[in-house]
Amino acid sequence: MSTVLRPVGPQPDRVYWVRRAVVLAALVVVLLVAWFAFSALRGGGDADAGQDGPGEGTVEEGATVPDDDAAAAPEEGATGPTVCAGTDLTLTLTADARSYAAGVQPVFAFAVTNTGAASCTVDMGEAQREVLITSGTDRIWSSRDCLAEAPEQLLLLEPGARSDAFVPWGRGRSAEGCTQGLPEPRPGTYSAVVTMLGATSEPVVFDLGE
Image 1 (cartoon, rainbow, N blue to C red):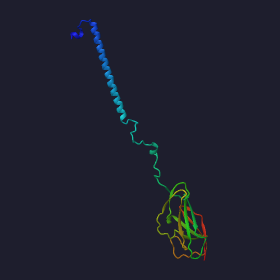
Image 2 (image 1 turned 180 degrees about the vertical axis):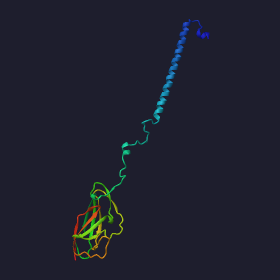
Image 3 (image 1 turned 45 degrees about the vertical axis):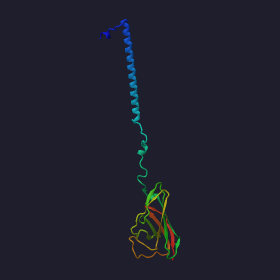
Image 4 (image 1 turned 180 degrees about the horizontal axis):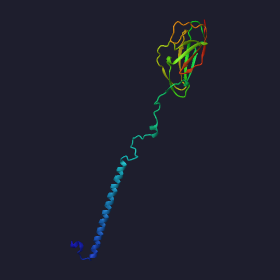
């Protein structure tokens, strides 16, 4: 212990104290360098570890980023097309001749066109339309008077699309409730119109001969 506090040797005590101070300083420098090197290596490892895993705001490879606008937009056509209104339709009725000889049955061509701005569905079944034939104020025949149960015929009409149907007339007279034994229509001039969903066609005029 005395040799540590009091150097022993031929040199003056000051020389030994200077040597010890130099050695101690060198040791401190070595320790500081080692500490800084260790800290640098450790800090680099932490930074790499932070880069390996996905952090906040990081998108993993192959992940899909949701589009806010797409998520908020409703599915197209989810509600489907609407039912056609009478104001969306244009009806036309034409006869296959202007005049019919005795015993020849008229056949009418009925057409419905979607004149609206959007697609819509329409029931083209016989129960949804009426062809009415008159002569002056005399009600002659209606396609609904003796109509049996008629199935639906739903069609999707794009804007501007048209659907056709044919309606024959047996030259007989009818009344509501399908009354039987009515007199036959006489030769003369007749008029026919078609009505559907509140829309009515222009009248078509034709003659029945003897």
